[in-house]
Image 1 (tube, rainbow, N blue to C red):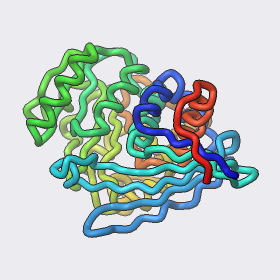
Image 2: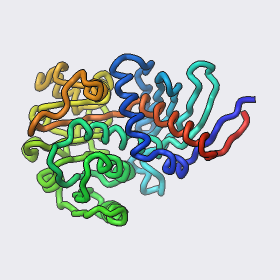
Image 3: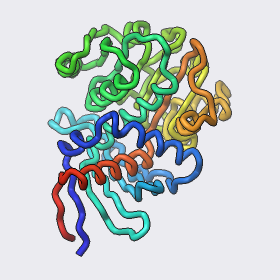
Image 4: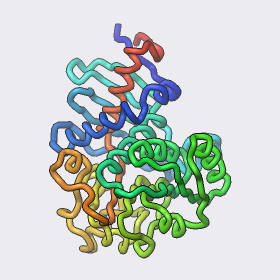
Length: 323
C-alpha cells in the first residue's frame, strides 16, 4: 500500500521558518536558471471570472511538485482566503505520491522566501522602512520573510480597505514592528527603502515619479497579461530588473510584457533571480533602483513541499494515510 503524509496549514507554519526555507528557495532558483529542472509552463484558466492555475515541476533533490491554485479576490467577503490551493509531492524516481499539503499557506511561505532572496541581493545597504501596498493574506508572510534579511522594525502600510489595514497593523505591532498607516500609495513609496506590492491591482499603484535613489521594489501582484502594478516611467527607472522567470513574466504579467513590446526595455535588461544568486548576473550596485517582479514558479512549490515533507518526517508531524 502507498502511504502519503497529509500536512495542514498549522504544521507548515511550524515547519517552514525563514531560516530553513529561504536557502532552499534560493537553491531552487539557481537550479532553474541553470536549466536543471523540468518546469513546463503553468496551465491557466479563468473560471467565473477568476484565475486558476495548475503548476508542476521536477527539481532534482526535491522531487515532483504539482499545485492546483485559485485566486479569487471576492473570497474575503465570503470568509475565505483569496488564494486557495493543494500541493502534491511525488518521488521523482519512483513516481510514488509522498504528501498532500495545504497550498495556500505553502504558497504564501514560498513567495515570502523568494522576496527575501531578492532582498538579499538587491536591497539597499542603508536601513529604512519596509512599505507594503496591499495588506491581505500575503502581506504577513512578505513582511516576516523580507525583514529576516533586511533588518528593520519600521513598516509603512497602505490598503484601499481600512479595515484590512487595521487588522494587519494589529498583527504587525504584536510581532514587534512599528507601523505607520500611509494615506496613499504615493506617500508610502516616498517614505520607504523597500516597497512590496502585494495587491490584486489591475492598474499601476507604483509610479515612476514617486521613486527615489536606492529603493528596492518587490512586485508579486498584477498576475495577468494585461494587469500592471508599475507604470512605464517606473520600469524605465530601474537599474536592475530581476524576475523569477523571463519566460513566465513575458507570458503572464503586463508589468514586463507591455514595456518590452513598447521598446522601453530590452530582454537583455532582464535578469533571473537564479542568475543573480549564482553570480552569473550582478546584484545591487550603488544607489540604483532595483526591481524584483515575481509571478511565482512551480520550482518554489516543489522545494518548499520537499522541505516540509523531510522536516515533518523527522519530527513526527502530519497525518499518514494509506491509499
